[in-house]
Amino acid sequence: MPAARARPINPPAVMRFHLLLGLALLTGCAADTSEEEVETSVETNDAVIGGAVTREAPEVGMASFSWGSYCTATLVSPRVAITAAHCVRYATRDASGSFGSLRIDKEPTGTARYPIDRYRSFARSGLGAVDVALLRLKTPVPADVARPAPLATAKPANGTALTIYGYGCNDDWEHQTGGGTKREIGYRFGTTIRNTLCPGDSGGPVRVDASGAVLLINSGWVSDWTGKRDVFGDVPAFLAQIRAQERAWEAAEPADGLLAEYWDTKELTGEPKVTRVDPAIDFDWGSGSPDSIIERDSFAARWSGKLTAPTSETYTLEVRGDDGFRLYVDGAIVIDEWRDHSPTTRSARVAFTAGQPRAIKLEYYESTGGATARLSWSSPSQAKQVVPRSRFTR
Image 1 (cartoon, rainbow, N blue to C red):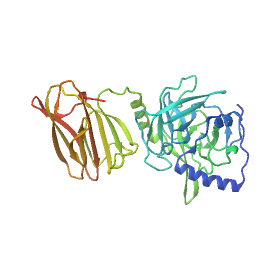
Image 2 (image 1 turned 60 degrees about the vertical axis):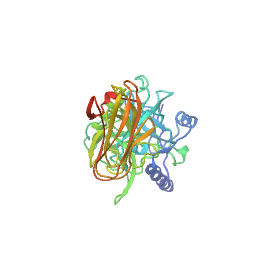
Image 3 (image 1 turned 45 degrees about the horizontal axis):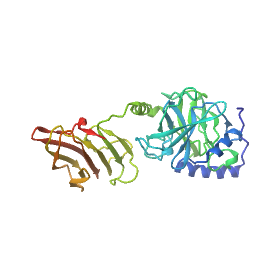
Image 4 (image 1 turned 120 degrees about the vertical axis):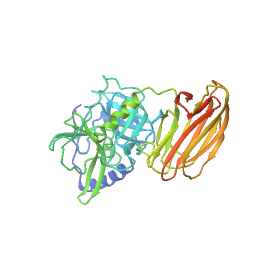
């Protein structure tokens, strides 16, 4: 498809556009639109602001989220795309669900959609260098639809040619809520750029040349003593974490262990920040937290699953925690120590039948200072030990 160049925009329009841009990017991406409107925008080749319409780089797609916004995202492996942390509300949801889809605009025409079932943010808040996140797709994108983009491992020399991609503003959208038409903009590394990013560009890649490695992630703009300037997430700074998350998502989910949900408040309400499988409950976080996305104080956790004993006898279940905790067996609370305290141990005697699983749930919160949580058991035939992974199922 031939590129359509943007028409100049007048100064009042620029001022109005960037006021709205700041508000949109600071609160997270552009408002979503209907499939019909998006397809019309792509196919009619509407003029875009500050760049050229393109269907090249099909690995750069549009992520539409279940909470009603959209961003740009780039395929970096067949099942993983990179975007901005603010696009996923600076949150981590590392458990299967339905969180939207990634739309790939194939060359020369046509589109394909791939559901998003997990996402991971590398920042708690803040535009700029930390604004990086990953999306996992429910199914891989075939190579004949789009091939993953490589990731940059280091910064290039000043003056290196770069290309910004994004589903940013076009004329039909009156500079307000983003476009839905993919555009490309060229600039040079080491230069400060201003008044360039639009809502909808958020999460898009800045690539070395036009089809090289993803170096930066479109974030938004900030204002300082130099005025407003566009800012970007730093991909090389997160490369090790990105690769580790890709490997974790590619690994088969184990059948044993407990479902672990973590919140960044003392309340176990709302969507967890982190959901994963923990092999056992045996943690001493010290003054830290379970995950880099969670603050070190005022967090909570819930572990749930089934516990099966190897012998038919009464077991002593023991919880040690700092701060509060409560243990449930088959929905009934057997230990309740839901208060602030230093490391404290409480126990309950529970009868098990060999090979018969019982539902178990341990809830925990950390207030301040040290943070520990441990679940052990013992019986007449079993010396005290941390309950092993092999005894838990979900």
